Length: 619
Image (tube, rainbow, N blue to C red; front, side):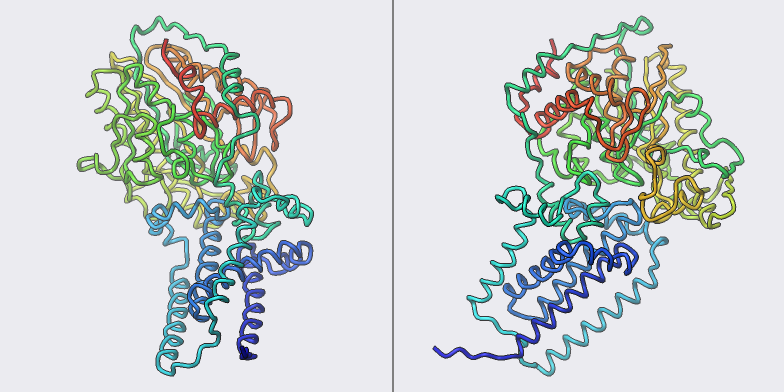
């Protein structure tokens, strides 16, 4: 059999390999903002650069094997890689995080939020670039149809199969690096480590494509060491039940109302910024502590996940979204436990029910009713979203309509980004940023602060109503995270609230604490004093509220209280121990309680729920 050889396909493939070398350099420069810095990275981390390059080339040969059309394969590969890089760039700009594999499950959220990004992104520039790309592609496609040039590369079926197999095998090495023998150790030998504990450093050290691939296996949560029915039951049998505190001020279970206020934070903590009035006098008067949010500028559902389940995001892959990825069946949580005590459980959020997959999740964690945007009749808007006042009115309507005590978890929407200068028709607040801050941020801050003032007024209205109500009621009010005002924390850096520099690379642990602490106010109308709670993670709210309510606590709360006693604030960026000392890495002194907490969480969320009956069962 005579083999016909042609030099043209070889030259095309060599040119393509050179192109992908340039593409990886371009993507890294685009995502990190400095060609010189990435050139230095390329020299210091040759193996990482090579792996990123080969990942891009492997994607290309897979498509070439599938389509057997060079141009189509080339365009599809570029479209895929560039799109991922663009998404990562804007995610980092707004949230300080690169793109994770599990973010691809959130496409509905991204599409729905695009209108809010309109004023931040230079749409004229985007449209011009998009138009040029379309024009070039259209011209090239027209050329192909009209001239019908010979194919640059034509592969026989066996070579196509070989390309697909080789490309897929190479990508699999990184996707399943923990499962394939010797791969993880080999990667470590060439200084490739998946630093899941510090994803910004991970992406900057290993490169975008390589880290993205390494993170894929993290989407699968493996059992922690020591997970077995025997060990789980030993932990459970060693717990001391949290004793119910008698509450003489009320003879029946009180209403429990949680308000997770969108982006609620105290802007007066920024030195040099002045306000015509205190925008949050009610919350300030009732404040009992701070919530340490596991997110900045977004990721509301992750805060909600901690508050409703008592679980922590710290035992999950960094950047994951439990509502989207993990809650597919019934799990124990505050709503279904309170339902077992006779509570009517209601979730309120004036936004579509599909957002963050809440419709499905709420069924699995025990809400009887979910009032989303479609559940409001002719609601009152303030700016582009349903007002906080309307949410307050709906909460009151629900407690009045329920014969049994109510558990309501309300997530507001009014103060959601963006904080456009024309977000509201009228303003009751005025702000003044210090010199050195771009004047546009004063206008954005005014819009944001108007939302804070309206949220505070809505909270006051709720308190005033239940102050005169004969129904015992507890109201828990906290912000889910700080607002994203400007790309890459720009407002906060210009106002010198945190140090300047790319991302949070120059921040101290105190800076991290500031950027993740939101006000917490717990109020009741039956005279029980609420202690100063300090800074706590949302995971530990339930035991505090149950004690205040004087209702029977599940044994599970002993797990939370044991951990809270050692480490009440627990996030990836900063950890706060009982003495207020800050840590980046979990200290060894709490390893025992951490291990118990982690094993119980895995059992209830992913495992066989060996502990569920004893931890949540009623006597």
